[in-house]
Image 1 (cartoon, one colour):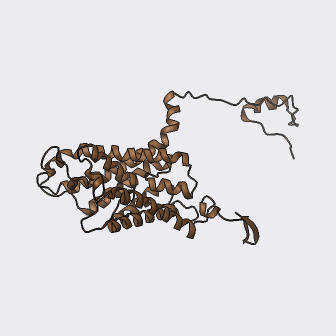
Image 2 (cartoon, one colour):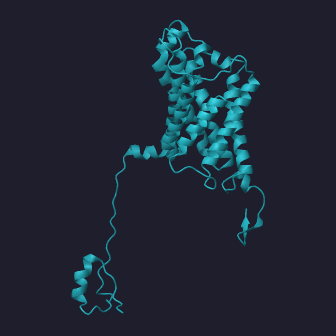
Image 3 (cartoon, rainbow, N blue to C red):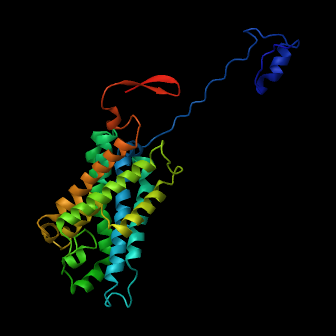
Length: 324
């Protein structure tokens, strides 16, 4: 059996000339090692800046898309019901549900691979408290999400302000009748407690499904299809329970409306309703949903719930492991 060493095709001729008997090569006969090819890529100044802003920029873009589609469909459906704007209504509540569902799906699609696709302060805070998301990123993410809500609402307002003038009865007239196309306001029959519970409930459901869909030990969707899950989720939530479940989605557009003529009425509605129902309730709901999923279902070490306590031995498949 030959014990000749293999050589690269480029050195085969040299190998035969130096070693016609096919004997093992000496160190001197071996071809010199190839030098590694090093390519130096020139990075411009903007590339270095983008490294630091791309994650918050992704959150900004995600919320902006969510608000553009969501507030946009609100305006399309509600303003077109006025005959001065349109001869016939352009859509109904089904259109509203589909518009918001498309908004969250596309917003997550744009941002998930860069920032994780939170596009919601309630999600960011829940992951920071229970899943080890870096706290130093939390203020930056929330600011970017809020700014995305403001800019997204501003784009929608610029597209529909002529129709708003017609519905309100004149340029510069702004009432809560059209402010609801941007921020959330409880219906006349609904108490603040009921509105709080609704926001709490749907955000808890939102976090439970998000955590389940991203849990590798559960049945996560194929890579890249998380936005489809969220499309189905928000479509179901909005069709059955209403929707907001996102402080940035409400506060960003609310700030925009106060800047373009609606004034302080968007904050004084029902004694600061805007603080308790669209902001505090979703945050508490998100924390509760995360706690429930991590306490009852999730067993990964990245959860705070599973890291609490002391080490204890368990028997897994016939062997003892120490699990912290």
